Image (cartoon, rainbow, N blue to C red; front, top):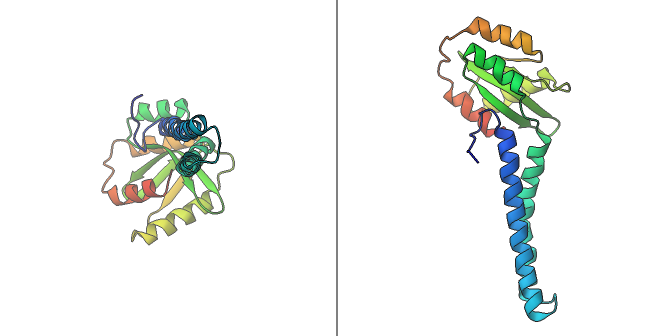
Length: 183
C-alpha cells in the first residue's frame, strides 16, 4: 500500500486502513499472549493474563483513532478532478475537531496569506469554523488571516480559476498549524 501524506487526496481512507491494521495487530498480540498463558496453565489466573489485559490499553488507544478516521469523510473524486483541471496545488481531506463540532474540509489552499476552502458537508457552519481557525492561528502567533470556505463546488472552482497560477506566497507557518489541528 502506497503511503499517502497528510493533505494529499485519499489521506483519510489511507489512515482508516492503517489504524484498522494497527488495531487488529495489537488486539491479536494481546489475544495470543492470553491464549499462551491459558493453554500452558489451564487457568486464566496467571501473569500472562495480566500482560494481555495491559496490552489492550494501546490497542484501545489506536482503536479510538480508527473510529475518529471512520467518522471523517474523504473528498470525492469530482472535487479532485475539478481542482486538477485548474492545476492548483492544495490540501485534501482535512478534518478539524473541536469540543463542540467537527469540520470536514474537502479541499483547501493558502493563497497570499488567505485561506480558501471547500466543504461539501451539509452541516458545515462557516462562521464557527472561521472563529476556530482564527483562534488556533492566533495561539501560534499568526494573526489577520482571512478565511473563506465555500460549500458549492462550482463557485469554489470559479474562485480558484480567478486565482490562476499565481504564487501561493509564504504559507508554511499557516500550513503547519492547519496540519497540527486536523486529523
